[in-house]
Length: 455
Ligand SMILES: [Zn+2]
Figure 1: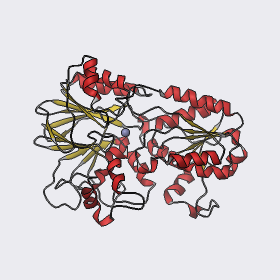
Figure 2 (figure 1 turned 180 degrees about the vertical axis):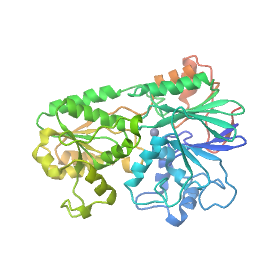
Figure 3 (figure 1 turned 60 degrees about the vertical axis):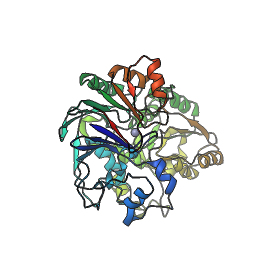
Figure 4 (figure 1 turned 90 degrees about the horizontal axis):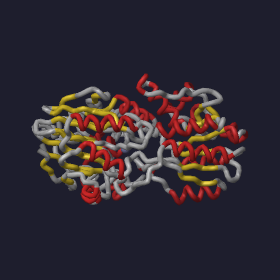
């Protein structure tokens, strides 16, 4: 068994990890935002008729024959297995040829649908696309085979629901891939379950994310709740504005708790409301708060004509707004102390110019690491808006990624023979830190496109 890392080697995101024996499996196939931003922007896009070619030319996609759409040679891989619904982990699976099956979590699929549903059709969509991929879904506890390899998906805690790590039993030995995970979140037990599965199966090779291997500060989700809570109490009669990523369900729940304890009505963005509607389809697996007049409502922004006319909104929004209670800018503006407004991106700050929050109203940025272009903040512009609107700026956040101590504890518990750090710009810290902690494992630095023999 060999592995070749085609994305995520020495950098954060864009994970594409090939496992190769008699069969070939890609673990994740994400968008490499860093690489992509070197050549592309809003106004400099790959050409639709030449997507894959333009991406290969610029190194955004690895040049592999038989892997992508419109490639008529023999299929290169047997399957792609996706760890979670962040674009830097699944986004370019959309460009994989459709006869290569894609495995992802049942709820991961719902989240991807929720995101793609709100966007105009694009060939870079995985599910809402004209090409029907062969999509297989899984849940924790289920097992699937790819060739002779047995894949055990196990839930982990991360900043998006339905995140998985994988234990893969192969002819040569057992390996595990962490996906993205943390031990300080509200669902830490899930990550523990993954670690225990690795111990049970005697994992020899551990491919583990190291986003925060250089960082040992940990703000827990409870701490975030406390901090935003204090800000909301101190806001007194003013409006409270919080920016939270639309897929960060834990953060949304944290903010909703603050709204409840401070007696405010939570007005969430239509994007948040859309994700909740999709998550409802997961049934008992996820407890989704009910939208309810006077407690939890969707914030209806003005669009196009600025008159709330039905024709102003795209279809997904009209359908959603028929189902959930809403509140408009005017109502929030007239009742500022009654509301906690939750925006899905900092750029939506412009909508506050109509609400006219009182001077000194708190604007709390509570987003995680950017996972998509649209989330990469234009911070200087946001700051200018904060100043223009005379708001008070706060940044309160708990990471989706495990701290240095937690990463080391995970490795110590699993006791792998080999560790391959991925999704990190600080891989050289691994050998030193493992040695300091007395963990006897060989650290192998992945190099883009170079095969590593595993067993
Ligand atoms: Zn992630």
